[in-house]
Image 1 (cartoon, one colour):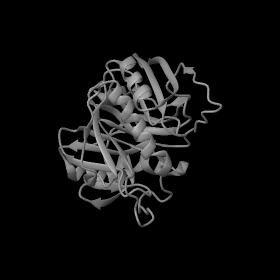
Image 2 (cartoon, rainbow, N blue to C red; image 1 turned 180 degrees about the horizontal axis):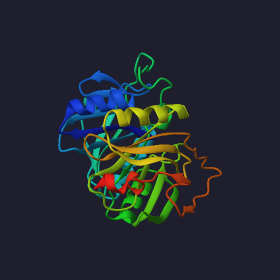
Image 3 (cartoon, helix red, strand yellow; image 1 turned 60 degrees about the vertical axis):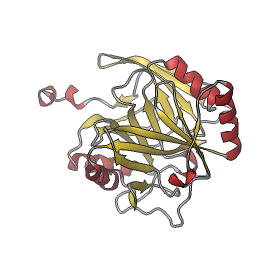
Length: 284
């Protein structure tokens, strides 16, 4: 199982095109869709209200049958949808406990040519690990955890509980494959998601993306830093829709045979500071 695709509903599709191609380093493949690896597409952009439109979780055929059985047993409404619209074998729609629209799919189409970006030269850590991760809203974290673990088969990775610049943080992280986490949540967000993350194959790509982000005039939300749980070296900035993205490198992988979940008492080993900490007058 993996994070198969993300679709965003946005007000300014041109700004998103520039963001995904010139800043993130994906390539446009037409129809508002963008590639980043061996999949035919990973990101979709449609007209909307500047929020997450759909999260696509890709399963094997057998895993999909198991998940559908769990959902049916819990009397959770699942709607079958046209797989041709996504370029997949099977496709089902369901809402998570927070109302985030999910699509459970199998057999997403792969590209026929290698991924080559003129911006992101080394490529992304994606393919069999999924496009990256996202942090979604969860007003009822316990309900969301039960849904994703018991219904869809996610495994608990670890937790971060701390105070971060005056805000209480309690985040739970879940993996679907060997990527440390494909999903996280910890409470109510202003939008359906707080951020999504993509992972580069080299550390220098993070610095280059940081430069491109500043050149594009996108606000840096958290400076370069490293997380204690997934070891990701990254920064956070604002998308054209005002939710965030994380661009990282060096993420930790999970071996379920040896992994022991733990709780961390800080967001970062170092860095990831909001810029206004250093330049408070600039943020007024």
